[in-house]
Image: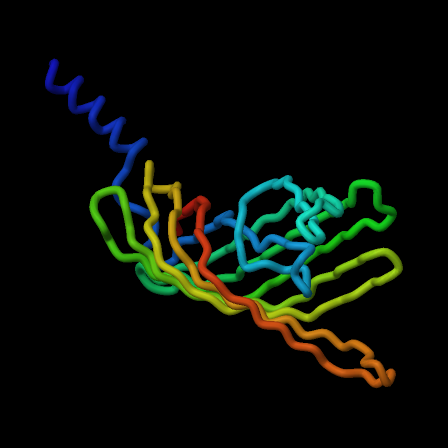
Length: 222
């Protein structure tokens, strides 16, 4: 009788903390991860650093070692994806990236606002790494635009992002994972401006860098 009770408890525990992640063919994966943030000191308003959720902060401006002003910012953003496992452990899907930021200057009259939207394909491959973890490698590409408003200036910039990374997915149970990784992303922004002669010219800016990939995913079996 005691053995039967122990076995029942063990099976119940295993059902909660299962070791078989749902990465088999025909399954679905939905995730939320970090997002591209903004910097008012960047020419295009985009920095390759990442954060998750809501952020607040400030920038101090100095001239000849003396404080010349202060910028306060607040941003919100997310990066969501939806994947389908085309074969065991290999998923393909769509990545959506959205972020917005508001910047105000102490004692100033002009506010800065910026927003970003990107969408594109993403691939991720999982490799077993023990009973409750899988190593993943992946890559993605996305296209979209950012809107950057400053005073009377209203500027739209076309964007492209390419990157990849690797990390580990930790599974407390078979339908949920905590994802940790390291990625490398490159941003390409293009804008059309008028030069000193009034002619329209295209400006191109490329930024790249390493960033942490932090988030979680939900797995649904077929």
